[in-house]
Length: 100
Image (tube, rainbow, N blue to C red; front, top):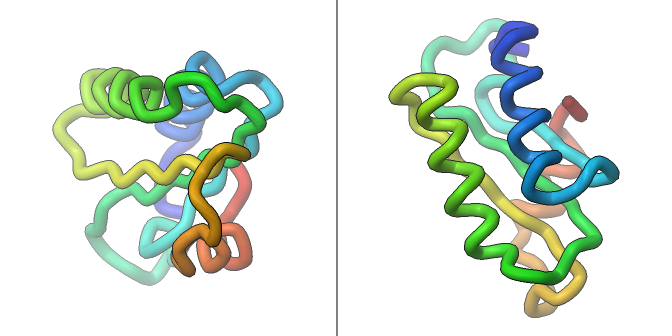
């Protein structure tokens, strides 16, 4: 995994702040491959919350940008009230990602 412990803690704390302490937080994509270089930070949050997920996503992204520096961060939010079916990237992220 190509994020350090401090970045991991920052991501987890911010996302739990907005999506609850029981939210599943998954790092996926190129940052899970120790042999790769560069790449954005791809994160999926699987939450049971349904209120204002879009607003919470924007706030969390802004806070992560400030805390982690100017890095490209892609944040996916999986919530019970999302339209079905979820895009394939969601199941791929959950199947191949690393829980933070």
